[in-house]
Image (cartoon, rainbow, N blue to C red; front, side):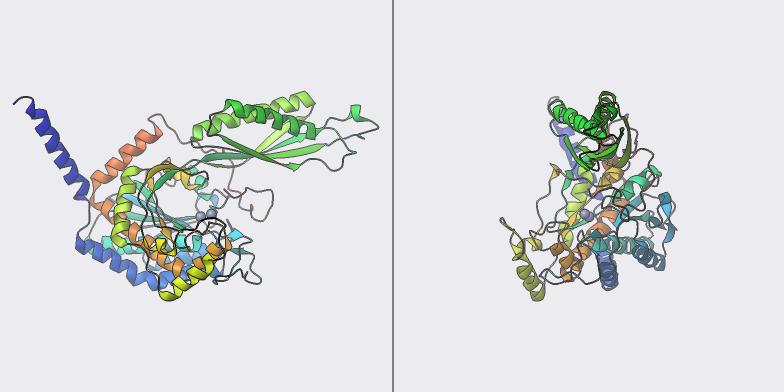
Length: 493
Ligand SMILES: [Zn+2]
Ligand SMILES: [Zn+2]
């Protein structure tokens, strides 16, 4: 009998765990209220999304877009703090009670240069418009606002304790807006952060990506006639080339997931002048931000060595730095469960016709069937993506989870004219409504389940390690507010 006791205890524990894991699930009445609240705002959300789409604004220049999102939130009763973290277009909107969990939803809003496109299934830039919403941030911002407005109403309807916030996060496309907002301590008291991103499929997978640091190394030499007085010159370009040789040899001695890439942005003026100035622009990436910081230190040493050996001097400027995404499986499962509850978007005959025409412009390669946009992909955690985003920084200071919905025709890559096209019509809007509903259900479930928040935090603390202190990879750089006006600014992630 004695040997049975642990088994019984184990079974009882398992039953308890199952009971507590589902304790936070919303009642059918609460689900219906939240879905109804999003539906009640969906027509207005569509107007906002399409208005932002028709006035695309580049990173840190999202003046009209940010003002529109803020005015929607203000009209719904949110209190707005604008111009946070030294960024005129960044804001935090708050509603709900002073006590209870604080849950944040991110809202991106910037467009991409050169991807102007009408909402038609063939290539057709809009005359006079030099950028476009080819990453769907018009939907991202408006969909997140829709979720937050629905949650605020529900908090009031049900008398639930909790605070809902929207973080208006500018300049995701290479401007690192969120990194500066994290550095400014704006997420310090947030319990959980959620976001979504437009895509060509519906899924709540929580993937890792790459942390990165980018920097420009500038070498200063002595100009001289390259044939008549070469001994008087010291070549800044030699220093760049020798630094590049050193880092290329270094590739053998770094962890295997490290990526290092560079371009020479200035190699001198003419071959008959010993270059007085040369510049090389580097990026270092790895899934682990601590490895990125270590390898970047070694790249700096290579630059110092190159300067020493060539009789030149060197300085460098940090341009960008993003943490990698720290996935949260506890939150991911909750988002996945609610995405299944909401279901994928349903396209009408006109939208399917648009999708069929647009898909003919995609390729080469196998494309997923159009019908895949009406399904939900299997959930996975810890898949590896080889890109970077400033949401990574958020995931190292608060548990973070995301989802993708199909706002694009299956097979559409981000940052393409085909994405801009779908982001400006029904397909895009329907995907954003699915995202808003999923986020609203997830947030409400978390308010009702302190256990789920505690489990998400426990996983978060375990993943980032006990001795972790957030140090921005961008150092003490200020937000590069003019990076889209000035070609020497950061590049897209
Ligand atoms: Zn993008
Ligand atoms: Zn994006």
